Image 1: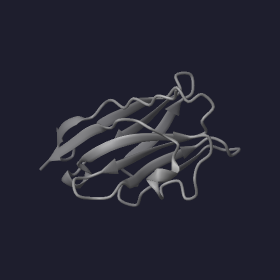
Image 2: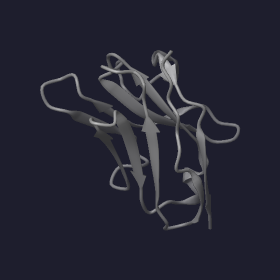
Image 3: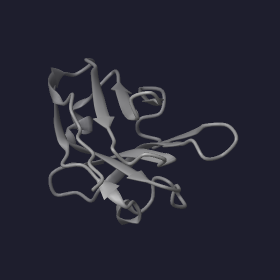
Image 4: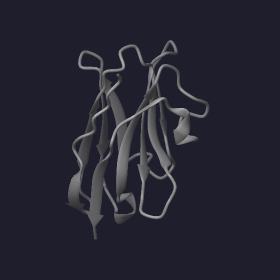
Length: 126
């Protein structure tokens, strides 16, 4: 049974930072991603990490480029999302996703991923 458990969410003021963590029991999964869902909105792909290709490749939504960074600690099989310069528009439930191979596109349909966590809430106040 694959388990993804997100942590690190919380409440911050605009301009602040948070670091989300997601340890995964999906050994060998080469694709890890973060999605988010704001109230009343669809899931949105935020960032993805593909370690299957010769060189690790990252993908970001335009809305977070330059502010968010996805990374992975291979020893702990943990993926992180460093979020800087947060704005109220970043308020959402953030979900970690994993799969053996990255779907195409990696930040497209959230249902393309095989494994999901329960989510961690991020709230940014103005």
